[in-house]
Image (tube, rainbow, N blue to C red; front, side):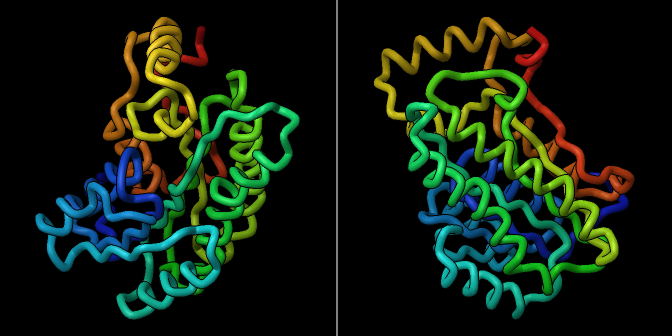
Length: 247
């Protein structure tokens, strides 16, 4: 993280695996205390052992108002939040006209992120930075993921206006949109192992590096967005995709 920026307290949702876990680890390594919320402890267990009281895990679901209220209560006992990453997200294959699929995915990917920010807004420190998580697929297509892409696109649209609205409160809001990343979310799409392998091979052919991103690579971009090094960046969506959208 940029050496001008030393966060005291950070909050990450969807923190038990993948990008959320990588962001949590990077923040802890930077010296920040972190409140991490997820439905299961997952990989956070190892970080609790390593960092002790620096990491506070809270079981919870961003679609539940009561869980977000408990998150705000926990944060309120620790101080003001310098960094917020509402990372919780889901992706499910569905017909593009299945509006119920959109509702399910918007509840987590969109409303979950917005409600997390709303719940913690009064706890944000002056010059706090917030990073939402989008998707590279807004610049591409993927059959069966229309609802997922639409949920992220709607969040992006709200992010841009919110970035303007939050400036008077000293809060800087941006988005990072990961490309194909080696995270457990691929296993939740509903494809069997053979189909997943076929998709992975097809995707790899479009990547300039020929391979999926590691979560740490995306986390590094998120941490830069959070840092004072990006202090002139407002309402932007940075795509981190190993060149997928260039093909």
